Length: 602
Image (cartoon, rainbow, N blue to C red; front, side, top):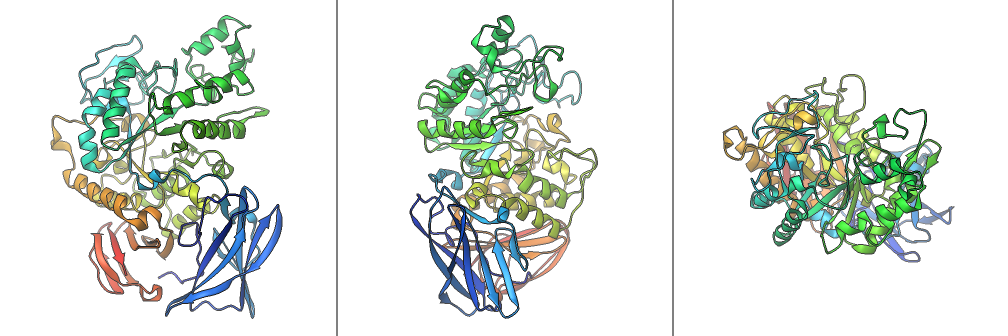
């Protein structure tokens, strides 16, 4: 078992108000195990960038721990703080990275942000990512654009070839609507749709307009029908926007190329040294990079009354929010950097139209300041979850996807390295940004997780257990719940065979249903903090604790022999919620394969 140390995180068990107003007072609490001795404890907090200290006072105690607290004023939009414990030969700091016996930097201090709270509904949501061309085909839309290579529904993608990005299977939004009962049965209450705007590809990240839904998907009519049906089933729809670029067929770039006096000319970066005359994202002619030094572009994308960002989350269309494609790259080009302005501008625009909307960005390579609470509310958690989890569960190192961005085999790490990676990410952002981030095991841009673990169903079940019990907003890529495979992005974009379900992993599907139900009903998983209690090479365990509930989660990546002693935490198992059964304060887990357990404590 991990040696207990003082603990604090941003959950409501420790922070009385994570979204205060300036001049409010917030009570901060620290739990300290009885075996940890010290003479005095203080909080070091910054007020108007000046360091201040206040003494912590003991408020309660039990056989296993003591609680200390301090009430502090919120002076600025960002409040950063850490705790220090001093005594005879003791001088230790507690920040979001953990306990240190040396001076630490404020980069990993705890953070409170004085802005309106994130939408409460996301904490109770389990999302389902749908790549519209590959999920379900209604037969109501039969369009074959000139760029597409039609493909029979149950054929596999041809992979890395001239057809990549242009194979069209014919999935549409009517098809998604027809499968809402399936999603409801799975327990899903949120859908993340990859782009639905017209383009010249099956992925639609090269939009030719942002003003309408692609007719190939059924157009605006199909989208509105889907929104209405989903609303009746209490399922929200998250859209996908390429704020960084558009497609070469977009009306903006066409007008800009046609006339130097067109207002759209200012929307792009022009460079005579480039063959086609303008800057493309990743050097691609097909994806003209947007230039946010243009006020007209800002108005069109997010500031204007009828801007793209505002239009689709308005009551007329009803999206619940946006996932921003390559969010970390938006607004950055050469000597110009409009990133923060654009990020915060999109957030402001969404707040003006629907304060209850969710803004999450794809940040494949993470910059901590992007999640400081003022821009993106969360990120697709590649760096703080998917990457380290792949590296720990790694059975297939030659799969270098997962947005590793590295020209060599995926590394293999142990449990200690895994948890340190997670803490490195978590410590750099406010707790509320962690819990508003999208948790993923894979996506349309990566290999499927079932392939990452070489088809090991037990390892996949352990992974799915962690996905649905860790802080954040879980998102399941369509088909993962039935064991679909795929070795890279295009290969993972496989269709679901709805007519012949003999290839489905039905047992796994039933397991996912149970875990989704648990995730949506448990207060500890919805509102709880995070304490690591076991960190070993092949297995780990953590506590999720809220004001009303405590849950222990155990995950192993392979065979495991573990002894768990909850007595030092003052808990005993009250009920086995999922996986390996246990009872009492002390129990053993012995498994010849990857396994998991979720237990309600008392």
